[in-house]
Image 1 (cartoon, rainbow, N blue to C red):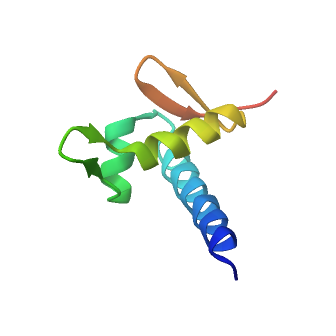
Image 2: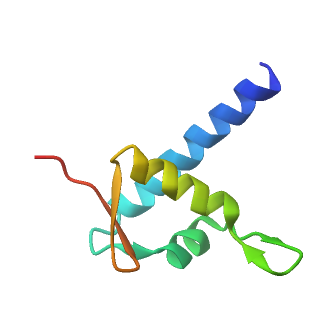
Length: 79
């Protein structure tokens, strides 16, 4: 498996993990809750936090898999 294939597989696993966590919490979760539940906190020089998790959440929103209302994320339900 190439490094790119490994990275893409890891992204898919992270997306699945976020979806599983949100599915278990139909009341929705804040980004910080998702990060804490999955234990994927990160920082860059102590200033910018959780780029990885924000990116995964963004990918899921762009794909229509999750939605945001205020500061809470939910599984997107399609009609």
